Image 1 (cartoon, rainbow over the protein chains, first blue to last red):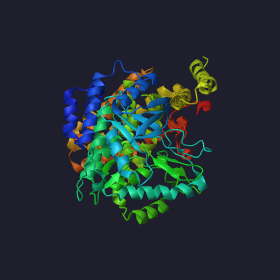
Image 2: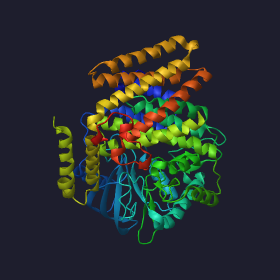
Image 3: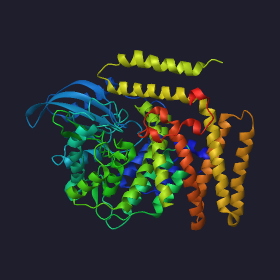
Length: 404
Length: 178
């Protein structure tokens, strides 16, 4: 593709979409989401505006009128911040369930018209339902998987109380990255953080009754190939320019695909900033943002969690606390003991490179395209995240220089 | 000439921070979050706007040097391909020597060069030569990635600020601005 061709990505022709599908096969649902993204990029751009709260309130009312058979009253809808990709509305509802009156605070979590991360609300709902009662997750109430009642696919779940960071810190201002917890909070939250991860990775996937995800074959490189294909495909679909280091990474990742020894549920964005905790009790109250969830190799999560961009520099100058919560050795030791799963340094390295690659795909490619197309509610955040690309590229260069 | 643009950006940041941010209703955290990001990016733009031309020159110089290295790595067996790469280097040298070269011309040639390098890394099938090319790109990229890290440092997302080199290590800057 020559440099001028990147303009076609504003309105990619069918032949381009077909070529992407052929060159980079992905999970079935991921394929559908990426095709939908490109088809709608063409058809839906000109008259788009971020939904107004008055419009959302009408959608909420219409949704419940159609989906509840008993009286209800919705009140006080308002926007929520947090996260870097979905529109979120918090509202109150008085309603009945199983003949009993209830009052709930619910969170409506809706895709923007184009996200820097095309993911599925139905998949997120399946994962939340699977882990209810195993680790703290919000109760799922409803899913509008096709965007029948709302402008885009939507998930409605229970609001969870809690904070993403101690109220006393000013760190973590951008999407909860780089939170400084300090020793007191590390001691309280660190053990829960690793215990919950161990439970996710050792969850028997047959219990999940997942309809949106297929398990890659154990003893093969399929899990790694699918993740690489997804990232590469999004890079091809979204970027505005080339970055030669990405080509080197693509080549190296493709030549060194690791074999998966057992399949796990992968959270996909397991880190500080994506759980809430109660400052009074020190307990994690909920795990959020399962949108990158999939079935695959646990090393994908492990490598994600241990990225420097989520870390907090140690007071002694020796590296950083993983997600601001645990020293590296402590994290690995506890994880293996609690999960009964081993850590393979070769796979950890491969997924570390892949995760940097994925971060660059999002921040250099997708964030650029989303802002350019004007179909998101967080354009300002998208442009600030460019600074993350600089850090991820430094890290990827360092890792590749050790192996190439 | 007075620093009209940077002064204006400074004023915008101050107005947004002191007047508009406090006026955002407490129950609209999304608006507040986005506004704070706007303030952050305007502050970044104020620090970098005077150096955009130097950045374009730096990037073109970097990638034209890299493509010349790759031409050397290809060597005689791929003489025709190597010659094509050298032509990019020559075009870059001519443009960089041209007084007042337009910033868009610098950027567009740089886009062409990065695109050519990327295509080259996809199309070379001889593994010995590919290994040389990849090694050259990875080693050279330490510099351009360090530059980018320095460039974006005013966005204040950097987790290890002490590892970030000053921008003046890469491009010429007046003392007060570095």
